[in-house]
Image (cartoon, rainbow, N blue to C red; front, top):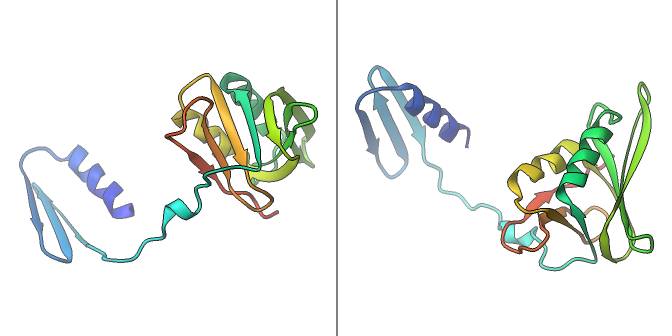
Length: 171
């Protein structure tokens, strides 16, 4: 992956003809006086479908703008690991985000939500949850969980195609 990013950078800065050479295990690119060579790896990659859940024990749908604002505010109080606690409370039909930093203090933000399933509370890197909002279109965000230690799945509230996975923190 690192080599692909480097190749893109070279191609963006280079002007003129691009010569591409490849064999079974190697790729070479020449742009003017820049030579780039990388090995092609034939390997077994993990089956990503194994970590993408197809159903959830707990689901919540919140407005995207409310979630974005909550994450911006809660990040002020997050520790150096950007740790936030996500708590979904079906009985109250709410999603809460809280964070604590000994130097700044602690804060909790509660959002109204459409919730189903069981109560759940887990820690995540708040920056990763916020990053998902840039990739998900629509006015609402669906949060899906399957228990402690399992990933958070985020998608557009009404769509089922794109799923953004956020792994929990073990702190």
